[in-house]
Image 1 (cartoon, rainbow, N blue to C red):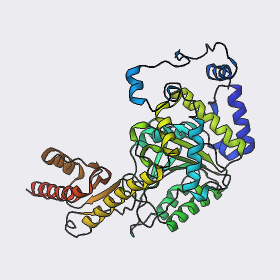
Image 2: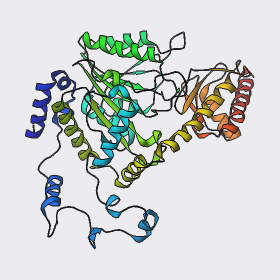
Image 3: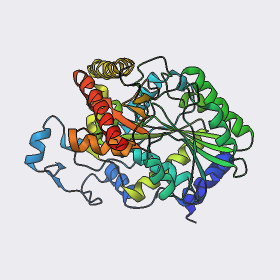
Image 4: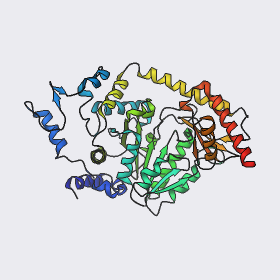
Length: 435
C-alpha cells in the first residue's frame, strides 16, 4: 500500500476507528499524491517567478491563452477565472462561500464539526465518491422503494453493493419509520450500512415533517448503538424547495454529531438550488468527526477526484461564486422559489378537486420538483407511451402504477391542461384494455 494511503488510514483508525471500518477496499487504498505534477506545479506557482514550465496550460501576455470567439461571450470575467485548471478540491473561495451558505441555511450545523466542502461535478459525482470510498460488494445500501434510479447504477452496478428497499410511506401516508427501522436493523450481522436520505424526495416530492425527521435520526442512532456502522448520506439535491410544514433543514445537522458509529456526509449543490443544472457544480462535505479525520477523508476524496475527473470545470465554479457574492442573489432566488411553490400548490388544488379520483390517487408531496400519481386503472408504461404518441405529453413511468410528473418544468397556467390530458389518456387506455 502506498505510504500516503497508509498514513491517512492510520490517522482515521486512530481518531475514528469506526469510520476506518466503514471504508471500502478502494477507500483504504486511495490517497492524494503530495509528490507529483499537481504538488510540484503548486510549489512552482509560489516560487517560480522567472519561468514556470510545470503544467499543461498555455500562457500568452501573462494570462491564460484563449480564443477571442470564446472570451467575447465571457467578457465580464477575467481569463484567469475561466481557463486555468481549478484545484482538485475546487476554488477555495467557492468552498468557503458554500460552507457559510450551508451554515446560514442550516442553523443546526452551527458549532458542528464541519469539513470544508469539496467541489464535485454535481450531485451524481458526489454520490459516486461516497460509493467508491465506502461501498464494497455486498454492503447494504438502504433506500426507500420510491427512489432515484441512479442509486442502483452508482452503488449497485458500479460497486456491487446490495440495495435494500423499504416502503417510503406507511398506511397513514407518512414516512414509514417502522419499515426503515426494520430494514436498517436487519443489517446487524453485516455490521455496516449505507443510508441514503433524499429529501425532498425524487420522484415523489416528499419531505418528512420535523417529528418524522426526529424519528429517522433516532432509528439511525438505535442502529449505531446496536453495533452497526452507519454511513448516513443526505442527498440534498432539492434543498430549500420546502413549500409546506416539513423539515426546513437538511438532516445533516441532526446526524452530524450522533455518535462515533455514524458518519454523516452531506451531498448538495448549485445544480437545482440555484437553477444551474448544466453548470454541474456540487459539493461533498464530511461532518461530525475530529479535525484530523475530516482532513484525512478530504484527502481521500481529492484522490478519487484526481483519479477520475482530475478537477471540476473552472468557469461554472466562477459563475456560481459570482452569484453567491451578488447582493441580488437572495432576492432573485426567492422570486424563483415563489414560482415553484405556486406550481406545487396549483397541482395540489387541481388534484384535490375530486375530478380524477376514479383513475388515480397521488402520493403525498410538499417540496421539490416532482409529484407521483398512483394509477388505479391502467399500467403506467402503457399510459406513458399513449400520452407521448397521441398527445406529445412526456411523463415518467415507475413500475406498474406510478407516474412521475415534474411540475417544475410546466408553467402554472398550463398545469390544468396537463392533468386533464393525462386523465383523458388514462380513460382511453382503460377503454382499449377493457375491449
